[in-house]
Structures are given as C-alpha cells and as structure tokens.
Image 1 (cartoon, rainbow, N blue to C red):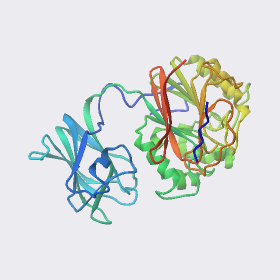
Image 2 (cartoon, one colour; image 1 turned 45 degrees about the horizontal axis):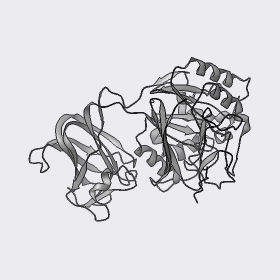
Image 3 (cartoon, rainbow, N blue to C red; image 1 turned 90 degrees about the vertical axis):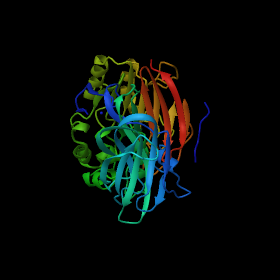
Image 4 (spheres, rainbow, N blue to C red; image 1 turned 120 degrees about the vertical axis):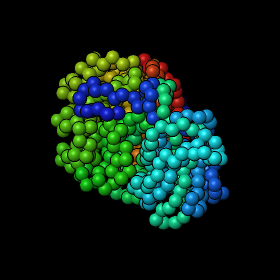
Amino acid sequence: MRIRAASAALAVAAAGATLAPARGAEPTCSAQPPVAATASTSEPANPPARAIDGDLASRWSGQGFGAQLTLDLGAIRELCGARIAWHQGDRRWNDFTLYVSDTPTFATYKKVWEGRSPGDTAGLTDHSFAGVRGRYLRVSFWQNPVNDWASISEVLPKVTGAQPAKAPVIVAAGDIANACTGASCPASRTALRAQALNPDAVLTLGDHANGPYGEFTRYYDPTWGKLKGLTRPTVGNHEYDEAGAAGYFRYFGSAAGTPERSWYSFDLGSWHIVSLNSEVDRKADGRQVAWLRQDLAAMDKKCVLSYWHRPKYSSGTGHGDFPNMKPFWDELQTARADVILNGHDHDYERFAPQSSTGVAGSGGIRQFVVGTGGSDLRDMGPARPHSEVRVAHEYGVLKMTLDDGSYSWQFLGDDGAVLDSGGPVACK
C-alpha cells in the first residue's frame, strides 16, 4: 500500500573531518557506462541490454562455456578495469576473461584480465588492469560450479582520464537487518539497490541490527556490511538492547565514535554533514547539543544536512512524533540547515520545510523518514501537518544528490521503482 498525502576515508569520530568526494576532477580510473551491449548468445528473456541498465535485479544470460558479452563505449578510450556483478554471485564463483579491442569483430584484441569472481557477493566488484586503449570490452565466461550459464547482472567498464566533477551522491536508510538470511531477505535487496547507486557515502539511520555484536555479523554484515567502507552510521534504540550499544561500537569501530561521544561531522563537497545520537544526551543543556552548536558555528559550507534515528515529526503508527528532538532542531535551524534524515518508523515520509515548532516556511528544514532498510514494515497513520509524501509497505533507499548549493532526491524501492523524487532545491 502506498499513501501519498496531498499537500568517505576519514576518522569520523573527529568533528569537522573531511570526506573527499570520490568523483573528483583529477585523472582517475572510474566507471564509464557503455552505450550498447551485444552477446554471442542470449536467453530471450535476458538480453545483453539488461547487463547495462543500471539495475542489479535484471541480467543478461547466455548458455555455454565461452559465452561472450561485448560492451561498446562509443569511442576509443583508455580502459583500466571493469566493475562486474554476477547473477547469484553470492552463491557461486565464475571464471572469466576480459579482452579489449578497437574493432567490434575483435580482429585484433588484447587479453587484459583473467580470473575468478569472489563468489560471496551479488554486488559490483572491481577488476583492474593496466591501461589499454580500445572501444570494446568483452567478458568471456568459462565456468562456474553449478551450470554452464553465464549470467551477469551489471557491467561497468572503467576508463582513465580527467573526469568532469560530479555532485556527490549519498544513500540513506535505517531499520535494516532482522533475523533473516539469504538473497531474498529485504535487507539483501535494499543493500543491492544501494550498491547499484554507486554512492560516495552511505548514511545509516540507526537500528542496523538488534543489539548484540552477533546480530551484526549474522544479519547486517552479509548485506549492508558490503558497504561498510562507505558507511557513516548513527545509532538507534535497538542497538541499545545491549548495554551501552556495545555491539554497534564494536562492529563499526572508529567510524561510530565512542560510547562517550558518538556524534561527529564531516564535509562532502560543498556540504557539511552531522551525525547525532538520538538515544542519549539530547537535552538543550547537554554535552551533545553544546558540541553541535560549536560544530555548526565553526563550519564554512553552503549547505547542511544532519541525521539521527528518532524523527521529531512522523505519521507512522509505530512511533510517531518524538518531541524530545527539539534541541537538535533548534541548533540546526539557527545554522540554517537544509535537510534532516531519520528512521525509527518503518516507512518513508517526506515533510515540507518547517521549524522546530512545526511552522512551515522556506526558512525551515526539510525532514525525511527512511525506516525502510529491511525491518518489518508498518502502517501509516493520519498525515501529520506538512507531510508531503508518505509511502507505506515498500522497502527502499533514499538517494540524495548533494550539488554545489542545492540538493535533489529519489526514494527508490528495492526493485528500482522511483516512489518519490524532487529537486533541485536551493540551500538556504
């Protein structure tokens, strides 16, 4: 049921740390979407175009050892690698070879890589090689331990050269892993969707797993744990099911800060981003709010985004409004912050900009609730004031493009469907 109302490498525990955008203007080996794909053999339901559509839920499949998938970049470039996601790649390895050519017939070609896929992930994995010029990249399949089918979910060639600067992309969701294992679990599906978006940073909005460290390793690590190197977490109430959220701090290490000070900030492009802890020390005269005030006063970025677990405003039936978050909102409002992200209620909701006292207006802050990472979904209640879009009973992730002075968003279901979108919206 969908209800729509009318109306990156840093010690994140250190305040003001800087996460350099992954998409810079310096020469680099970076993904380059191809313009076309062909294959030596194809299953009618899974043609080669499915391997370059940006969707990890679709695939090219061709039968036979030696089956080939050929990608056309549209022009001769210096290729330096490929990112490949194999269908059911978390269940089986695949042996394959990569070739580069400047002609589609591969009359002349160079073998640039050969080996085996990891066999432990259905997401994209990198395969790098020394730079070689060509227009076509070919993936030749040789074997797997299950059958003679080559099945590739997605391929992105990588090229060397100065890339135009692009706005950083973040992916966000909370309330992620519960007692479920395997590719069919909601957390597995949302993790694959997050990976397919190729984010610069992943903001997790609390309730990664239920308390103890073993819950993280059993349910979270095989799914969203694949994005751990990009993850900037915040803690939720279920992490505190274990005393002191010990499992959370053990799993994320320095990225989570310390139990004594688990709030932090970092910069991404022209944005200042602040992670707060809604479970402890949230009073106006507390240490966390004092730190937040100092952090915002010292920052020099155009745009501000903050995130934590419990939402001040929510139409969800599971929890609803949490008024005790007002001290956070007051400080962020004074600093003219633009966006707040929360989880806690297991649904998606977008609010119009509003103040800490619920007054709508352009000077307010836009809040998103994204508790859709994988835990059991819940119903929505009556729309709270200034609720613009509500989506119930759909797993998904929020993609935000943080441009220089503006932001845009998409809420994507785990199947890739766009359930909400907007922007660009100028920062204040």
